[in-house]
Amino acid sequence: MANVNGKPKGSAKRKVNRKLDKVRLALFILFAIVVVQQVYTIYSLHQEKHQLEQQLQELKKENENLSEQKKLLEDDKHIEGVAREELGLVKPGEVPYVR
Image (cartoon, rainbow, N blue to C red; front, side, top):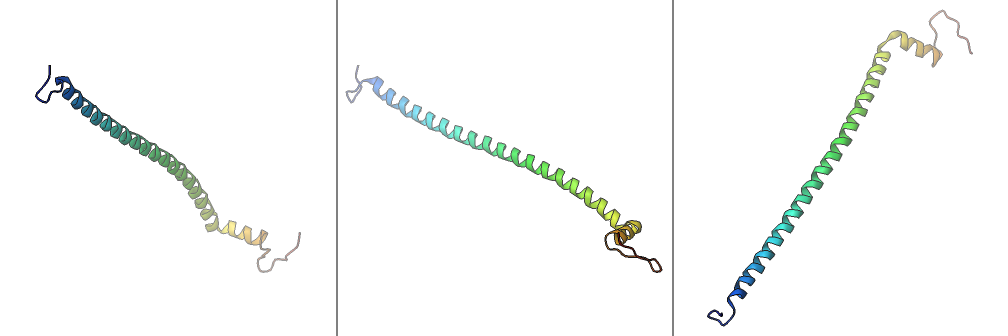
């Protein structure tokens, strides 16, 4: 059976179906691209978070070490020891000797 233009009725439906299939395929590809981008972004952020956590741990250790050094530098006995051992200083009345 033919329609008004002389073409079979099924031909028009097939064209519409092909167009719909193309639109569906384009939407699926677009959706897949968006999903892949989001997954990559999440992965990158996870990696950055891991790096920052490691950096934080290193900085905490460094902060602890610096706090210990600060305590030593505020201790008069430690300062005196450094002055005597490393700088060779003596108290008034003491006789310096060389090792």
